[in-house]
Length: 88
Image (cartoon, rainbow, N blue to C red; front, side):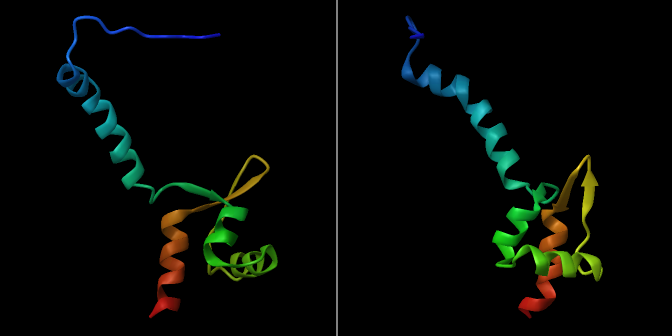
């Protein structure tokens, strides 16, 4: 299916002004990922851990996990705050 949109009677400036709020909304959403939930694979990649190490840190209480359905997820902000003392 080939979909085309033709804009007649609108200048480039008017088009830019019309889509500017949409772009700003997307940028705000991308700059606040603190409450973003991450999978075990994403956390392992971020911390350069394997799943066994991640499991040990979760069981010891160093990392807090959330069970949603049959998935295990982690909050990005909590993972970063748990790692922060390691970086000092």
